[in-house]
Image (cartoon, rainbow, N blue to C red):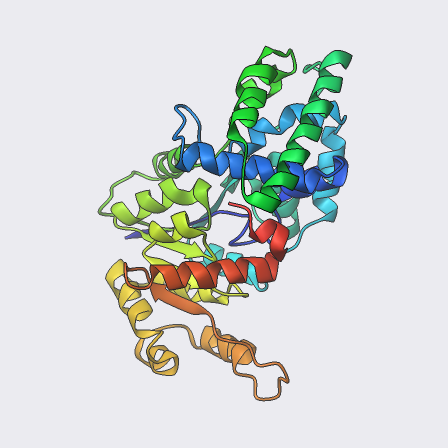
Length: 363
């Protein structure tokens, strides 16, 4: 059986939320501005279930504001290169995956960031899918539109302040700004032209990989997909429903609900364990390991055929007798109705711990 490894980038590999970080760097109060648009994105997907709106379209909604604040391609490229932060062990985990099987990164992130991190990780850019953003001068913005967008940004920051106090997102005002006012502007063309690789488009990318690189047969191909958020729901579901392995790494609630296995960890070695098993054994064998691991981790390492070097590395990280600060071992657990609330709670705590409360709280 042909084995594939496919992963999201931000969360399972890196600690970044590049669009949030760009907003914070180049837009006054950009962190709160982005936080509200991210919450609005979740609302449109989960509550309003807006037609023709996909998770991750936050990256479309913010682009006119990037033009208003004169953020250029060069700004995004340089900032992305200088602000790459990885989950511990991520580079080794990707190298392990590439050693055993063809490996791909699917990300909603802008291409400038994915190109920067691919270069940093020495990962082939041709094995990545991303949101292709071009801030070139073909997209004009009138001075009057710039002033109006800056005014809208201030309104959104005020919404953020109120939301922090009473939890009111004021979706009526946000709907008016993003779906009535901005679409009237010339600069809206940059958002309209942008195709975000999130949700359904990530699933399409998985199928594209299978069709482009392989003679696709569900009985002969097994995909391990790792994700953590709303934008990963469809590819996680696709992997799970087509004989593959769906893994949530420090996932939010919607990602964990679609996963076979949830990982909660400050280190990607937990992912490496599953990669090692996925490269050699069928799905049922891996699920048996995930069932055994929480009961007796040491015995599960003895009972399942994981590479000795990986076990030694795991023990060095988490069971080092010389370490003054002993770490809790990663959670690797099958997802079911009985443990999902616990897994979501532990996962959200870990997201905030390793990515910071600002990024860790985003959907």
